[in-house]
Image (cartoon, rainbow, N blue to C red; front, side, top):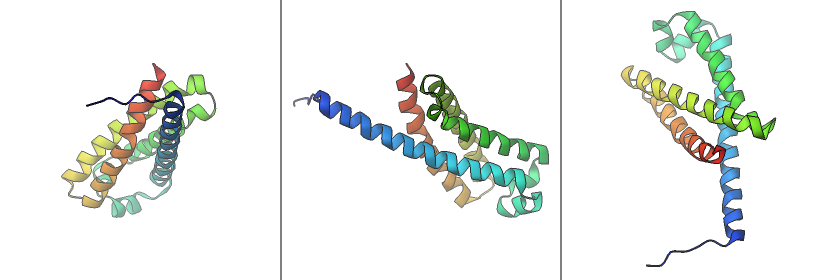
Length: 140
């Protein structure tokens, strides 16, 4: 077996593709969570209960607060656009927060037998985990 050593040009190209992929995932995650948070803030509770069962079991302030948290974390995912130096740690923190939120909501939807919403959370976890992993490695 031989190990292949990447040339500097190949290494830069791979890093460029990885960066492009991560920014694409960050953009999709930000759009999703801004929309989800906005819905939790603006929709009447009756509509939210029709879409998902769990808001019927939670206080309205908690649902609204969760929407606000989703929007804040989504905006922080894009923080490096403003300041690369200060934005990267905020991005890593936001990705970790979203991953924790997605994991909790996966459990909530799975227990509530909401298969479609549980699958959505699995997809969100699959998108957030690489962002957290690679961006956390860049911060060091």
